[in-house]
Length: 147
Image (cartoon, rainbow, N blue to C red; front, side, top):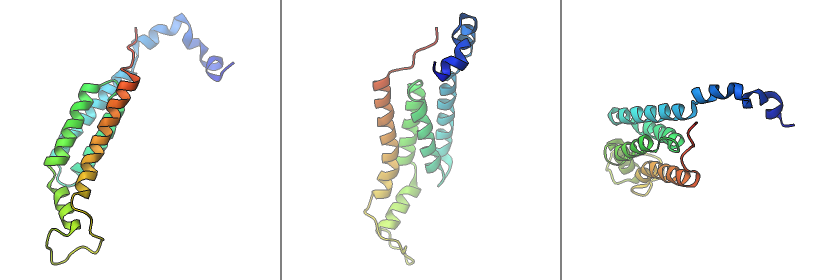
């Protein structure tokens, strides 16, 4: 007899089935997670340097919630990609500074990078997570609703 059946078999009886139907919280938690990632993704647009990292965290949350809340999570991915690609001058400035394209008197001591490496790392992070989320949704499908 498995551990689950031995100690949790009372959940399988008809007596407790209404509890799982009434408190089916899996989809509700994912909806809340998608809304939280959407709100913080929208707020990350207005935060100058740390907004890029908040957008990365929101993309991770949207990846988790994408299977059950594809619309909200997809909007979050779109906001984060647009924010990182077009609305974050700190990424472009740090990329230009580290590649040596920006003439500064006190240049960085670090090894120069190719132009665009930092930019494509941050934008690619969101794009890769979005592709993983879409592939996961296509392979696994939407979760079944409680009856």
